[in-house]
Image 1 (tube, rainbow, N blue to C red):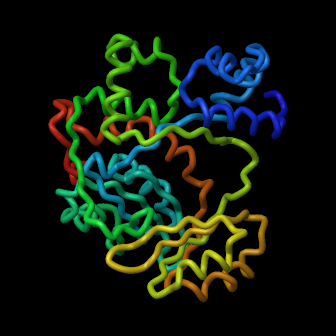
Image 2: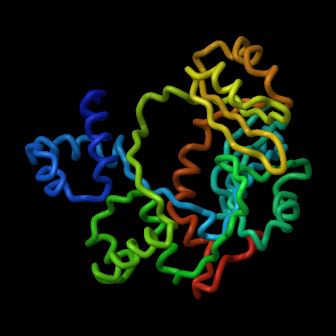
Length: 307
């Protein structure tokens, strides 16, 4: 592969975040960029290092987010990971070692099936815990939607999640629909608030972060905490009814011991996540997740227990 020019790559990312689904010729015309320069850069990076993905509001789809921690023997990690990813309601998995040695799983669960989560998780481990998690504090009552679309919408959502720039001709083949129908479907998902946007990102570069500290904090001043570590990339989830999910990213080349000492006073539970171990499994799982969640007759979700 051609060597990566970081400046060139970031230039393409900026353009695609501004015009995530427009054709290169339209982008060239709107931005006054020489078309062949744009195409050369695009062909060099897109689909290899740069990707564009749809962002979904799962609340509109009647799904609620949970984070689960499962104890799994080390020798069974790979086989248990494959079992978990057969279940499309498991959104993402990470091997962890700490307060639980095993697997962390992000779950997207239909609200009417929440009561089945313990039974679902017990299929994979006899020792687990789970928390409802939100991306931000919500004081207002949340109104959940439902799956009110045909099965083809689930297939389309899978495609747009993996590559939102999939050419229309390819979409016609994959969906068995004509261009006007596909445009209508995409616009409907946007109008309904299911698609909240598209974002361009880089992957398959030399990893900056391949590890993370995963912490569960109960009583913490979150604003003070984030201010103290404002120069560190930290993901925050709000747990219900109380507490925070905290994940801060670092490299395996860093001094892990000093970082544990630095962060552990702020959390009650701590684990180390190995972000690189299941990356390929997660990426493959993503390609068909929605189309495996939804019944083919379009009448709602399958059961989280049938996998």
